[in-house]
Structure formats: C-alpha cells, structure tokens
Amino acid sequence: SSELTQDPAVSVALGQTVRITCQGDSLRSYYASWYQQKPGQAPVLVIYGKNNRPSGIPDRFSGSSSGNTASLTITGAQAEDEADYYCNSRDSSGNHLAVFGGGTKLTVL
Amino acid sequence: QVQLQQWGAGLLKPSETLSLTCAVYGGSFSGYYWSWIRQPPGKGLEWIGEINHSGSTNYNPSLKSRVTISVDTSKNQFSLKLSSVTAADTAVYYCARGDAGATTVGYYYYYMDVWGKGTTVTVSS
Image (tube, rainbow over all chains, first blue to last red; front, side, top):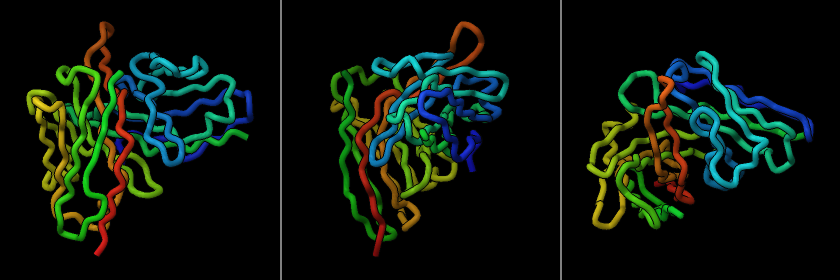
C-alpha cells in the first residue's frame, strides 16, 4: 500500500488542461516531486519543490500544493505528454523514508 | 552533467542474492542521497532505500530485513544487495540521486533528479 494516493487514470483532450492529484499526510509538510515515465524508459523528474522545473521540462508543466494534496497541472497537453505520472515525497513517519504514489496513467485524446 | 551507470546480474534463481552497482559520473558524490527504486512488470515504483556519502542508510520497512545498500566513495559507486530473492522480486531496478532539505517557509522538499537507465532482474527457477 502507498501513503500517497493518486487516481489510476486521467484523460485530457489535446491542447486542454489537466490536473493530476496526489494525496497524503506527508504533503502537509513536504512538497511533492513529480515524475513522468513513458513505456520502457526510466522516470524523469518534471516538478520539484514548490513549483520548480528541471532544465528541459516545458513550462506547460506546473505544480501546486494545498493541505494534504499536491497537484501537477499540464496546461495545453500535447500528445507526447501521454505517460504515467508518479508523485513522491518523504513519508509521514519522520524516519526519512521515501514513498511513491501508485501512479496516474494520462491519456491524451 | 551527472550520469548514473548501473549494472548487475539480470537472472537469478530463488533464494539467491541480487547484487547491483551504480556508478556516478560527472558530479559530486557528497551532499546527496543515493537511492534504489524498483518497478515490477506492469506496476508502479517502489522505493527500496538510500545511502548518503557517509554511509548512513534508510530502508523501506517492507524490505529492510533483506536489503543492504553500501557505498564506495573512492569509486563514486553505491551498491544494492537483496537476499533470498523470490519471483516477487522480479522487476526493473533503478538507481537515482536524491536531494532533500528545508525551505524558508516551513516546508521540506525531497526529489530524485538523476536516474540510471534501469536493470531488468528476473527471478526464475
């Protein structure tokens, strides 16, 4: 079981905006990080901290947080954004463990 | 640009010990958490554990009794050993660099920004 909860699947029309959410107690004190994973590839960090994008990540990706929920928003989704998305943070135990959400499969229609 | 190169045996028999190594190229080894993550076929990511440059470790409680992560700072490498493997340990194993800290507004951050390409490990008799 995961301490971070994500919806298993979300879909979005090409060019529209989609929000992927992640819930967990640890998110009341930790910013979530977000990873994009395409089939057969390693995960890629797309958002970290309050709302930071690594070099090379398009600015259509953004992050936000409220209470125990973190969100990844893709504004103007592109076909190449179809992928699995995972959130991640330390867990809520205070023991410096890490945990991933179960992942969200994003389909771009 | 930091790169992680990982290697290790890809086919194991039940009860054997999984052994993987990850080398860090192009960046500092200190100041980061060096993690192992795995992904069973068709499933999500599972954090296995981490080590820092001084050898301090944190392990996933569900695997702690079988996991050892070690570091060789002279080679900028870290390694994973998972004992008594079963078919349930069949997965793609990734190494990754982690960073963590506190912000000025009372929040903490944690993320893994550099990943290895992954090693497929199959456990089968």
